[in-house]
Image 1 (spheres, rainbow, N blue to C red):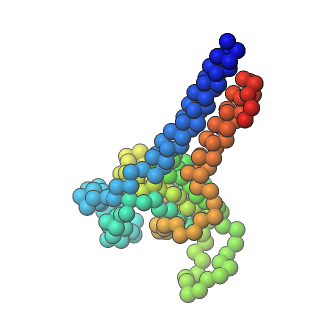
Image 2 (spheres, rainbow, N blue to C red; image 1 turned 90 degrees about the vertical axis):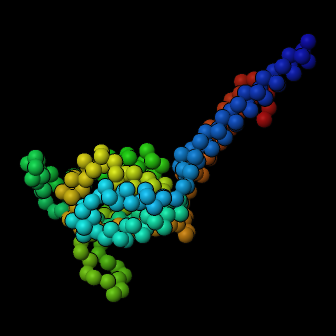
Image 3 (tube, rainbow, N blue to C red; image 1 turned 45 degrees about the horizontal axis):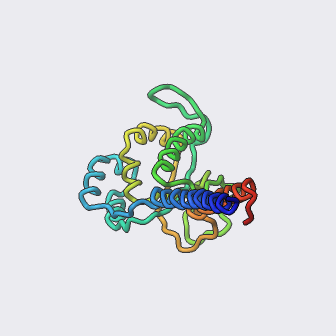
Length: 227
């Protein structure tokens, strides 16, 4: 009888431990599916439809529609990181429509907060955001420092997510805050060659493994078993 109970207890523990580690693995795989997406490159008709919805807005802001088209048509379905340099508007800035007055960096914050939330919902996230604390230390054959305020790098899951965010009516509604808060900016996309930080893939995987390991230890401890 004692042997039977021991075998039953061991079988129950094995089932629970299998469920814990299997569940952790499924959660991690689900996160990878969300974080990396399916990696389907944009189709030409998707690019055409998106640029048509932008209309004259690109030209009005001094952007080159041809350059954007070339970037979208060269889509490889992979993630990329957008590098942004920003000069915020100094002093108080008044919204000509509402009459509301705020500091330039406050208008920018009202734009960036919903933008980052939308980015995270699509598997993207900020990589680094920092304020400038000095002038150019090393500059070769470049124009004079225009007075940048901030630098930010944002990870996008794909170029399709960039298109969907830019076409989202909620994003467009918040865009006015960007123009009120930013005096000058430029952005360009990059893809990683070397990285010295743990990506969310590793961070989430290690966190789930730690949680599963702790649950494993607790089950063995309370059951009087050994690791």
